[in-house]
Image (cartoon, rainbow, N blue to C red; front, top):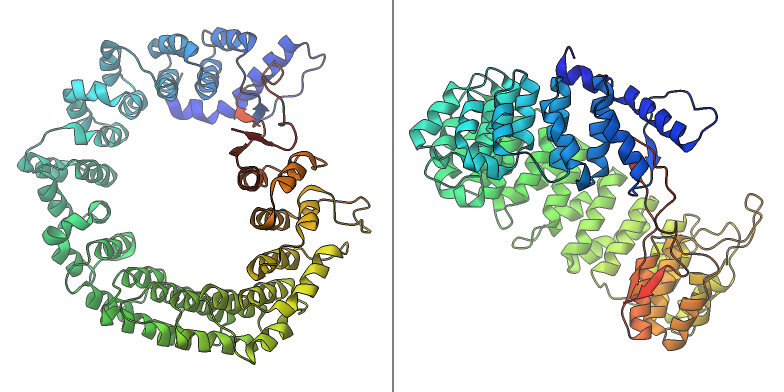
Length: 572
């Protein structure tokens, strides 16, 4: 076939319809559907008729059909097809030979060494590249000379695939540097650096140094990406020096390397780079790198200064996030300043981080944010107060009560959770009412929060209602949905947590027998955990039967039921 693998790849989608139509004919379809370019969803079942058809297509006169059959068999993954695919390694079409190598790798097998050696000298570069990408590592360990041959290949495609195997080769430092400098293709050099850096021998450091000192940005980026914390003594100074000159992707790699190695002077160098940097794409990356230097005053001051510059929300948000991880030096003052910013998005992010920092200064700022007009800021501030364990004084519960009932359901939910955390038992009657009187259009977030608040308050008298919410259709009809419905997933999860906290054997029996329909798969792990606690024996969630996308359709019925039995969990 002219053009080899690329031409074959362009026509793969068309071949899908050919196989699908053939299968439909075997199944007895009266009028086959017209050919399309779409993949079809199939059942991953072993099917003798399908396999017989596909193996027959492996010998088809059209290389497109042979290639499609190989792709399908590789994706289905039946080891019984390995011999038939292996025979296609001698196919007349190079695209088919390459696809056969890839499919064998998918099946976890390969061919004899003699066949692989022959393919390493194939006339088509795509086949040679597929050999280096797909053949087992053990083969190259037995035949390192084939990797050496691949690194001398005339095709950059094949050399790049061979470069990924270069960690097998035992080079001296001189040979490693010479081979890097002799490679004409930038992409191959980068892959050679990454592969050799995985090998911890005497050639590693000289090769990385040569790459870092080269004029090739891709090689330098690969070298920076390959540096680990153990390289700090050897390459720390080079990483700091690179912070002042690298640009683009190599600069991002250098910044990340400096954060990993943490060499002396890195924080100061990063701070200078951040102040002078004109590339907006690098501002957040610089802030993230500075976040690795907790306890360094240069880093703290630089991040606080970036918040004040207001050059970009993304840079400010990255600075706030980095400061949130500081503990050795308190970031509270800088975060409090960010919480007063004109941008509500930044105020919300500052509130989130203040919740992790905690302390009197943070709590004072968070309480002040309860006067904010933006719902996102109010939610973030109340959640942060709850996380940092804020205590109530005489006036504070009243401020939170004023937010319980706001039009925004997320604000109401956050206020409910905070009232629970503050121990405001005056909230219990209204929380119970939310669970017992559900309107058709009531938002779910406050109900989930009500269950969480009742848990925090230790009020366990609503187990019967929680069991109903978890198992029954408790949402009343609406104009758009005339039938009753089960509650939203996060409300049912909260109900199961409530039962796990306050229920017992009786509630376990209700959960096992009370579901009106199969709970959605996302609820089953929570159900299994609750039953494990309530019943005193381990339960596991049962998954739905999952379909797998292949390039052919199955002729058989599913080999297992489409859904598990009620309630979708089973005792271990």
